[in-house]
Image (cartoon, rainbow, N blue to C red; front, top):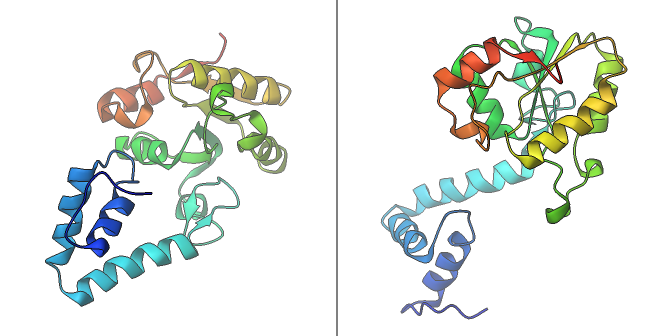
Length: 205
């Protein structure tokens, strides 16, 4: 693909093209990042590149919660101080980080890896819903908290998941309505999110 931006170096152009493929990064920002790297020593750039390669090569998915992890079981799931009977259902790692920042939650997580969205071609089979069902069967789960984004896709995923797990003798709750409709969890302020977790309500009450 030929770029509309022509630089004096093909190597520079190629690097800018790759950076501009990242979400939220346009060509001007990509150029600024590449030029910044050019000011670094070769050793510093090598460390940067090797870190990204090692991340992609060695990152794992936790066998329990499906969050990213350095090991087969992530640090949260292996933490003996966490309440293993409560599972917070989230879309992705950004939401895990958002909830953790509140300091108001001490249970575990289950990362779906997306939301049901027919428009985007994402169905239930593409998500970690069946693994949640198996987890409830296998472990002593007493409560599942629905903490998905408050939009059409999130609500659809909530309801589908509810129908899959309602047969189990567990409590199914959702965030209190402090989180406004249409909000993405990762962008909700910590105080509001923390209170919505603490004041969670029964799902379909």
